[in-house]
Length: 457
Ligand SMILES: *[C@@H]1O[C@H](CO)[C@@H](O)[C@H](O)[C@H]1NC(C)=O
Ligand SMILES: *[C@@H]1O[C@H](CO)[C@@H](O)[C@H](O)[C@H]1NC(C)=O
Ligand SMILES: *[C@@H]1O[C@H](CO)[C@@H](O)[C@H](O)[C@H]1NC(C)=O
Ligand SMILES: *[C@@H]1O[C@H](CO)[C@@H](O)[C@H](O)[C@H]1NC(C)=O
Ligand SMILES: *[C@@H]1O[C@H](CO)[C@@H](O)[C@H](O)[C@H]1NC(C)=O
Ligand SMILES: *[C@@H]1O[C@H](CO)[C@@H](O)[C@H](O)[C@H]1NC(C)=O
Ligand SMILES: *[C@@H]1O[C@H](CO)[C@@H](O)[C@H](O)[C@H]1NC(C)=O
Ligand SMILES: *[C@@H]1O[C@H](CO)[C@@H](O)[C@H](O)[C@H]1NC(C)=O
Ligand SMILES: *[C@@H]1O[C@H](CO)[C@@H](O)[C@H](O)[C@H]1NC(C)=O
Image (spheres, rainbow, N blue to C red):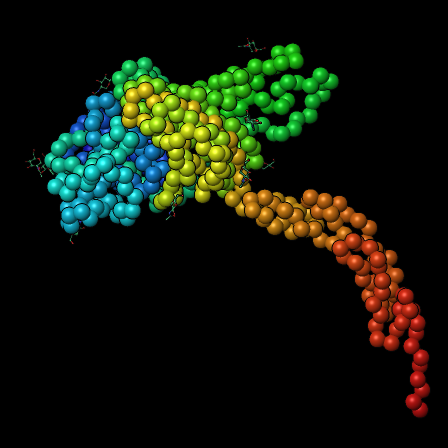
């Protein structure tokens, strides 16, 4: 029986390495080697919860949370977990058993990020719990209390290669599960948006030009349908079939849909719009959560055009993945001037939260995937690529011009006018005005004057 268990466990882990997190675990969007398991159907005290995580899989422990991005991501996962409404606090892996007030993560992660509730921590209690209802914030709790909890596992050493961008089978399963249960979730206490519709980069942005054999231009040739929508031509016009939760004429609006959250994959060099007219206007404690992800080695340039609240107590944030100081943008005011922010990696989370009834809002942003290294993969032909900010710029070799240095001019020295005793040079800036530099003793425009022969005898 033990052998059977070990074999099962082993194949489980190998399976995880090949594709994704074990069934039931959620894969971190920021680090594909990290998986989370939200336990909402059984409650344990802190030590028992820790033991539960430790026993379930090697490398598993109560979760640590080291960035605002991770905190938001976990909150979105938590809120979309079945039976979550029976949980109040969630145990996470921090405690101060040894030195009061010195909190440590059980997995050894440095305790650098925290999101305490107002007036916390209360040092009478040693274990930290997180509230999925109250903007994911923390407090210390009596370690003996039984709570739901969150396990984290690193596939680290076991799986060194990163996972393909669009291949997240376990996420898809969970998304389907949560879609089935969405009416219940809507009517109970999980009104959060966490969309797991992974849009393949090939469909999210088509190539910019397509050869057309017909004389009448296909209205779909300009790829008017955004965010993975499918274009249906109809005479001179078109309509878009949008992928949930996008809607609008061109699928440019995203909803705060309780059944789904969102990951948008931005193909390289494309600019896209992302807006919501649907911040929640429901009960308190609502969260909307979206993510935008570009391909690896890209960053996101996001221009926040507008964020509007119908009340003054909502929070709209854009969080950078993997950055300890993860807030790229945060506002709770209306009428902000447009501002551009750039992510440090290829993923950002967009988060809307309000703890107060009657708050709603809308936002409008534009985002683009920009090269990490603008010169990576950029071919300057007869020239050198130099990064000008985030844009690649070609510095051309002499006698070449054009944005890609592929416009050649005739070489002014091509037919070697300077003969054996001269070197042909020209004005490199203009690629013109060839002339000869003569070897010592040789003169004339073509260095052809032979020096006198001296007889010293
Ligand atoms: C979880 O919720 C489902 C309904 O969504 C219910 O049938 C089930 O009994 C619940 N499980 C627990 C352990 O509460
Ligand atoms: C508490 O201190 C002991 C002894 O110094 C150490 O072994 C243990 O790892 C510490 N525990 C934590 C959670 O820091
Ligand atoms: C924590 O809860 C246990 C069990 O209810 C109780 O015995 C203990 O006194 C509590 N500890 C604190 C610090 O309140
Ligand atoms: C947690 O529960 C176990 C089993 O009931 C008990 O042995 C342990 O002392 C409890 N831990 C805390 C911190 O209350
Ligand atoms: C969209 O276009 C398709 C194909 O022309 C058509 O069948 C469909 O009814 C249209 N949908 C709407 C909402 O107009
Ligand atoms: C980016 O787009 C260009 C063409 O627009 C293509 O050649 C290149 O392969 C793309 N790179 C990635 C990583 O998709
Ligand atoms: C984004 O929306 C604005 C305003 O509707 C429009 O001017 C702009 O062209 C759009 N950009 C893209 C890439 O769709
Ligand atoms: C980001 O987008 C803004 C607005 O479109 C633009 O002005 C800015 O140059 C862009 N920055 C980068 C890094 O592409
Ligand atoms: C974190 O971000 C804020 C806001 O952009 C900035 O003021 C602050 O200096 C940053 N802190 C660090 C340590 O980078």
